Figure 1 (cartoon, rainbow, N blue to C red):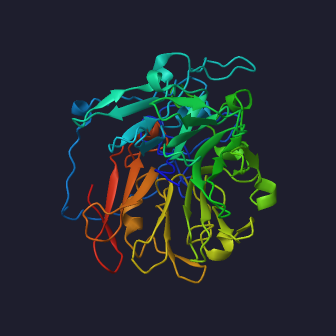
Figure 2 (spheres, rainbow, N blue to C red):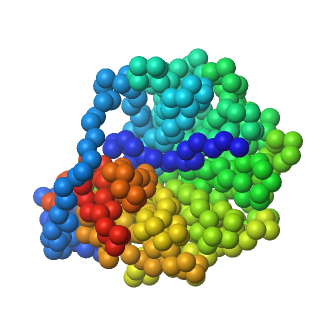
Length: 462
């Protein structure tokens, strides 16, 4: 069984960020405006300004590792196209997912990016996003022998359908070639790698379709039968008709994306791979059905060292989820009991990206989740007894991330010192934030937090 990168609903593009409110900023005053602000009918993401200046950000430490931007010389020319409209439809605020995989087994990693789709302004009743224009295609880049990349999307047959979100790469049928599972608003797609540089859409053939708005996904063998299964995170019960409500300030140029509280959640889905290679939805049987979740990110690890892989779901503005694998084909939701459901004050936050790794090398995987500015990014230390401690502030993450909004994230050892550092792709959630804030910026640099000591404290180096 060969598994590549599982996830990521990476949300790399700064311009393609989903907009959520800060829990702390919601109740705080906005700056005075030259004309009175009137609010639309729906609840909007908050662009409120803190009543007092925020504390100074954490000092940056000298970096022992540097990176060079080689995008232009590499041949990568991907740009996520969100198809922005005056309606502020929520899918258009999502960025691109990405997977790194060696799809042709030549020993060189290749790259797959998801993309948006064309949206009418406004969308007609019953219409769906249109991906026929090449600028909205997903993109597969093949790495050549000289280290540059070439676009092989059309040749490989992975242009895609729907308004795509995330991607999970793994060899689901154990034939030695990595396949692709793509999430989207409008339904999922499973691409089988034919082994000759092309892919075939086998979604219907293998019953691998998940309806609604799926965001992230990951492959894992939850029942130890030797076959990879799929966990699919879904966001909300949303459509273009309901999503057209006016949210936020009614002055020209101030309309905001609607807050997720305006819409019902959508349950995650677990697809079990049967012995004949087809998939069946076992969500109810496995105990993961939960229509109140609003999942954006998913990560996998054996959190309690019992030999069974558990699942963590980053939820937007509702309680986070931790599904403990009981080893009998079912899961137990333990986020609140284990201490990862909320922040240190018992409040929900806008969970978006998530990763799991042992950042302090004590033998137990820890959990990191990205969130919004003024919320800080939650870091949970695994205590080794099925419980977690909120260590955002003691580890230094709180001061570093107070003014940031994070999306895709990954634990990496950037400097090869044996300690896992944290990388985050960032952008503020509101494209109008600089009209109402003196401190927050829409475009934000990526963040690298270096794990600089055995005491598991982190410092910003980017």
